[in-house]
Image 1 (cartoon, one colour):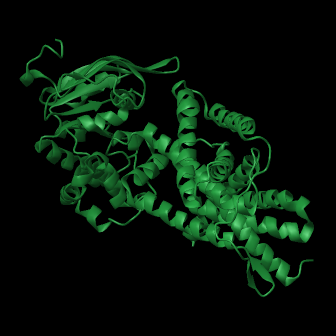
Image 2: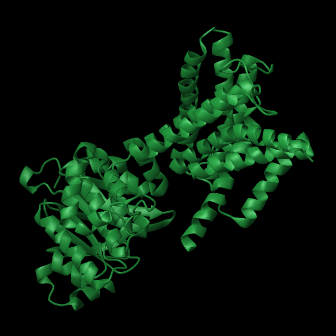
Length: 242
Length: 298
């Protein structure tokens, strides 16, 4: 199915075709295809070193990649990373990717780099979701707790008014309660119409959120499953051991 | 041993030249923060500032303030050309940072030679911004130009602070220095930020050159000592920290001035490099970073 030839209703929000990436001579991501529909929340599951982060980096051009990426039918394969945010594609990196020596307020303001005029209003929306950030507004980002840092990373991404929010292991290093809180917020964002592509190692949490899951192993997507078809975690484990 | 008057006079002189080193050091930090590159051609901007301003004043008869207003953007453009012609193509071709740093050194030599061929090797200067003086406080003489250096230096530091903390571009430059990938993901055009950093850094060098030329002289080869001392100032202050570079420059300037009066002019650089060694031994990440860490520990 060609992206140009599809009808408006069936055009995926994001579609990657045969995307691959290498580090030197090592092919970390073998040709892989995936898609996310408008307003969908899709999770990528896989063990350590499977290629999840490389896939996210390849999609956002942080790592040079081969293959094609379409956003609402438009070929964005050749766009540099900084132009993706203008299209509405924003990623929260693994490890949160904050500006650690800047305050919470400054981190949020940089998030609205492309929407400076709407920064104040957008900040209000972020504080609605994460009231704790309002209390820490003048605190240096690097001094926040892990959970607060993750809230700030997501809040900052929201300042960029994403249509598609990509998150690389947002629950990493967080206490289970905080991780649940963060992932619940993602669910709320998805209900508000933001498409979400979530890389997650914690399968139980991820399966609660998503309707569809890609399983990646050894640098390749090995399965695409609907979460209601997964009867037990053993169904997933066999892919992990692929 | 110098007497009290000589000591105080040296401190005054050292503050003036130290502020110039500080401005050059801040120039190093601005580019380093945006790109990770140490631009060894930084001193060349100081030389160009003095040379271009002198040429506009004497060869074109332009009034001083207009000459200054023209010199700064002209030198800033030279910084942008360096980024566009040398640094950016090398980065796109995957050159290592070491190779790019070496290329900036080659650019410095090239620009010096072009200046030599264009302007000749005759040292040049121009009159101080305010004629008359010096101001005498007891036996200590303070040239009026020092007040220009202090005033403009302080104003520049204030403007830089406002730029980096209050403007969209300034914040984006700081964001690039702390996490370039995250900045890109939020839509910050990192390549444009690098271009701006080279322009800003060159403009800072130009201001330093314009201010210092009346107290000394300028020639095609004065860039190297200013570049080296500005680099040392930046390292003493904790490389990448603008405030640290300024403090490092002032410390270095005063130390050099004291070394000249106490030990003779030949010991000026010995003092500078000894100060660098001591600071690096005690605070491997620079004085400013060292103090910050110490403060946190308490």
